[in-house]
Length: 260
Image (cartoon, rainbow, N blue to C red; front, side, top):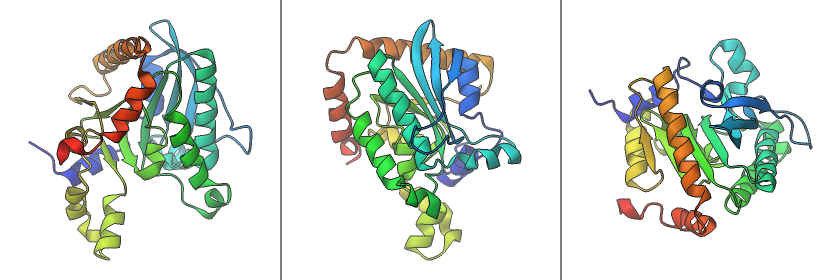
């Protein structure tokens, strides 16, 4: 049975769904976490470091929500502060320096929008990520594994290829937020979800993503094995592409044309 767009949103938010740390521990070897943005502090909503993918050194960055209430509190439910995005950018620039491909796992309802985040430059941190990622001279793959909310998700998704899990969502705003703005009624979130075109199929049609990953065996060993194989093969192909930056530019310039 096909799920409605809003049912997909609920599935993407399920706290039993694998999070960034689950993908890191099941796909990569020898992960070594790095911390801090060298400006303010270390944001627990963003996990990043160096690992091996089939013996290839890579930089891995993930937005981590956590599973339990305690974990979600410590991770701010996957809503990064500016220092989280600055940590991610620091690791990406480091990856470029040493020629390591970058793999990002995105799962956030959006960047934290509290006063403290705004005081520390939330908008600037996101904008700097968008600008810098567009010119990094190493392959970048971003995988939306749950929620992909607004600029908070896009700040880790300016990539050569963007993939989505079958029941992940990618949207400029949450359905509840959209309904509150358009109709002054958050209970109309289901209708908003349809209008937002936030499903993986919608994103594929519009050229926003390259691949939809089935979830039939999500969380099982075979699921991670298959994803590891896909990541390794795609990284190898991207490393051989002499026109990487031009194709990344063209990719984002063409978004939406397929669906017109």
